[in-house]
Amino acid sequence: MYERINDIANFYTQVLMKFSVLVANYNNGKFFRDCYQSILAQTYSDWEVIILDDKSTDNSLQIIRGIIGDDSRFRIYEHPQNEGVGVIKSKLIELATGDICGFVDPDDAILPKAIENAVAVFKKDPKTVLTYSRLMKCDKDLQPLQSSISTKQIVNGDPYFFNCPIVVNHFVCFRRDVYLRTDKINPELRISEDQDLYLKMYEKGKFKFIDEINYLYRTHSGGISQNENKKKSYGFWAQVIWNAMQRRGLKKINRKEIPETYRNAQEIFDLLNYQNNIPFRLIKKLKIILQNFV
Picture 1 (tube, rainbow, N blue to C red):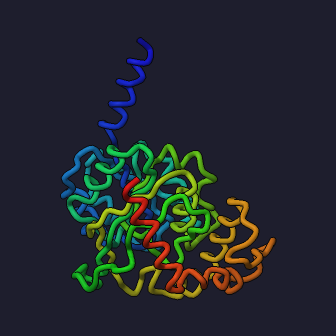
Picture 2 (tube, rainbow, N blue to C red; picture 1 turned 180 degrees about the vertical axis):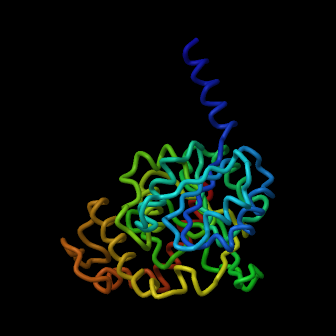
């Protein structure tokens, strides 16, 4: 009898999946309307939106509150001081109540089936802990420029996977309960917090690539990836990769010693140069083909 009850509980857990859209805002309220409208247009209806403002210095909160009005599906919070995306994204996940979470930047947008596509994968395969898809790079007015070409299915269960070069990209969605069993996002990160999340989730289960464009990525002068922070991201990313190497207990990569202490970014990325050679890429492609038949 108890097994029957557990089976029913597991069934409803898989069928009824609430999705939490997580929005970390800092001075991007002027772009939020596109983000807001794209969420309202979703074909999947069981969602909530959590917005946490990182003490913006403009009128972002006023704009966002004016757009949302009294829609109870949106919850807005203001952080007492500016602390960066590591802190803000960590707290967003804590504030969420959904089974599945996905970050959408306030200056970007998602396509109508983005959430439905992700939830369908999680319902079908309980072992999948994270999904990702293609993105469309857009101009400042969110007009399409170029779709991502590097995004593709990765090899699962490989201790030497570090998402370098970047393959896993927006629209990333993940199981909240699995995330809570990781070391969680490093709150000290002001850049590369997404890579930190991906590598920690990778260590807990399967990643699934959704071969569709689900995310519209806006490029503009105020974006993190376009400003001076881009120069710093190289170092933060290397630190995230080194931390993953330590968590996984790795001592060597491609017969080269992994440093016991982190010294500089170039030393870490030099260890991964072999992943760009043709034999490695061919073997990886074969592994992915075989993986799809398992």
